Length: 225
Length: 225
DNA sequence: CCTTCAAATCTGTTGGACAGGTTATCGCGC
DNA sequence: GCGCGATAACCTGTCCAACAGATTTGAAGG
Image 1 (cartoon, rainbow over the protein chains, first blue to last red):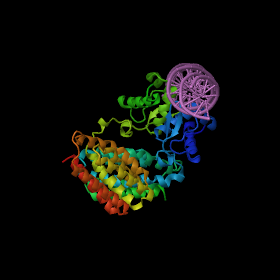
Image 2: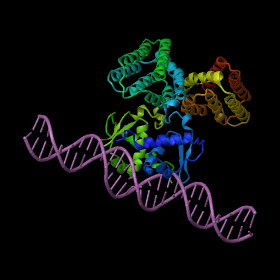
Image 3: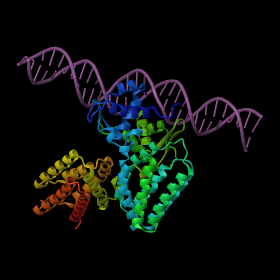
Image 4: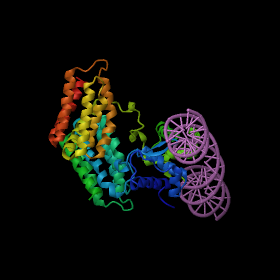
């Protein structure tokens, strides 16, 4: 049986319609029934896709009237993203540079012992995940998130959470799941993170910011050689 | 009729179940049928909610086996987190320092003529609002937002949008609405913004970043002497 | 105790149905 | 001809009943 749920295919199909027919913001989509007919699936499936699209801010449904384009998928990073669009979406990395590097600096400056322990634990989780053969995106995020938390400033967490779903989508899109990670990549990723954590532990603000910047830069290179 | 779709309520309900019953990562959720019964809705509605939860990375469905918790909502999902969980502090200003200053720098570097016009228009709107006697928070935000947009990087807008609600709360809390603004305050705020816009117009990155930083610093002082 | 196999359970998907909101059309009165 | 209101066509939101295919469970049998 197909791996992908039909509603996922329908999601991609609707995104494709918006892009290929160049539907402007405010334009009306085909009705659920018509979409169902087009894709050869039931209306329930189309609805599942539309609910997701609406929650991603791409469409908006008005009862009785239809569904409308709320923002173009290419302008909304959350959209299902073909490889060809990666370059523009890598923009979220740019924000990470300024945001996370500064978060690392602040974390190094004023982390508490408890926050530090939390960061160390996140590092341990990431290490474990990387050394197994499973994708470690969740653990990766968790560590970065704990560093942001160590600033003691919840607003950093908030900005971080707003950003991460896109970063994750980029990561997922850029990684060939079927192929396992070469050991040297695991080694490199571990070391990069460990340098950051060490700088925060040593309360070295500039070192932490620099290490974070380096890590992000390398990560971007890994995704987009 | 109810504003919120049932599937949105179901989404929130399932999140609530995960949190209140303290379901660990990997734990199994009640079946779709049972959830439907619990919420008093049809299975189709529950499915719409589950598809969203899965696409948000919170749950994962395994055909024949059930749906499972993939990551705890409280560690992800900013959307459904009540503000009370993230104590709102002046800390959001700290993030603005790094985020908006860098946005101003980038805007100065690579704004297009069209984006510049958009910024200028935002400045005109703010000027008008400030010279009248009404609160100008909306226009203030709009100008800052247009500057973020002038980076050409939508991720900046996203981070900005995630942050602004708190900033606005702080602003409203700090301003005595009953008292009108003294002319010298209006004068100062106008000049600060104009310096930023001028630097972006002149494509002066360092100047733009510095002016933005200065403006934010002064703004913070005004709110919290 | 372990294996095998069938029943129970669960997700994935379909079709049909109805309520209630929105849009467009048509015909009527002026 | 032109405005205007009724009405039909269309659309989303929701429910129900059903079946296919995957997984888990548990009991029978060695």
